[in-house]
Image (cartoon, rainbow, N blue to C red; front, side):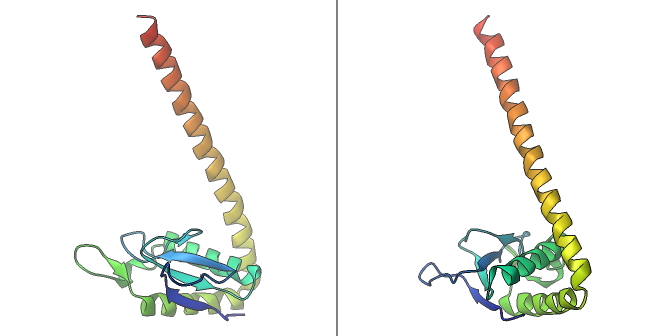
Length: 141
């Protein structure tokens, strides 16, 4: 494990399979993404299993605001690729040492992520229902 390639994203480059993206600018720097943005890094693993482990390690680092102390810049803060690589490597080493705990955490985070998506979908449906009720009321006036 740990055969990861981390580079700055460029639309000119071919994205290897088993890759994901890391936002590199703004207060959400370090956030893992499934789709590229103009300001991101590409993290590529050897297979889907490694990609998945790395994705959730990065997700945990981002959620715990571990990258905040590495942000650089005065107007729009950004995360330097060297700082990202250092934090990522240390965290991946810890994930390997504590593999069973890490696997359990990933399983829990996945289920919570799905639950969050369902809640967001339900909130959108409620919002649409409110709009329909209000529009119906306005038409009757």
